[in-house]
Amino acid sequence: MNRLVSSVLCALLFTGVAHAAIDTYEFTDQASRERFGTLIKELRCPKCQNQDLADSNAPIAMDLRREIYRMLQEGQSDEQIVEYLVSRYGEFVRYKPALTTRTLILWYGPAGLLSVGAMTLLLIVRRRRRYDASKAELSLDERERLASLLNSKSLDSPSPTTNQLDK
Image (tube, rainbow, N blue to C red; front, side, top):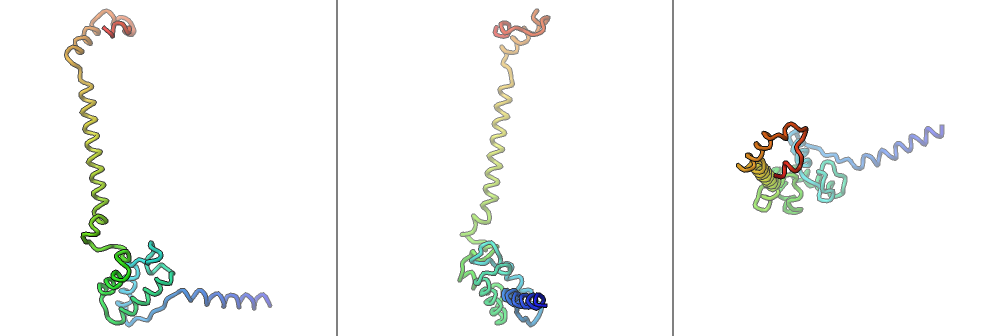
């Protein structure tokens, strides 16, 4: 009986801790709830760096979720909320940074590096093919010498000697 009572007490104690990490917000309509969910999925936690605000349990993420909720209740647009957070925490808070002159390398850098690498590889392959093709062609003297070797008496032997090939 004592075990049952102590188990129930422990379960009640730990359920309070589990509920402390969950944010609950009351929304007036489903559209506001969806906007809130979209915003906290699109914005990055400044402390966790690779987690969005929805997944982060950091205190700053909880504060930002609360702030986003407050701004939604005030009727601010998604753009206003994002701009407020960007002005406060920098462009890093966005998972998809805006396309500006400062972020051109971020957006087009990988494609540029990939195309430079592909062009370099293409040039190397073409040069190697040209070099191999020029090496494979025999000059007129070499062709005559090969023909004379093939027509000579040495064809009767199983393999030509090195002296005959050096002539």
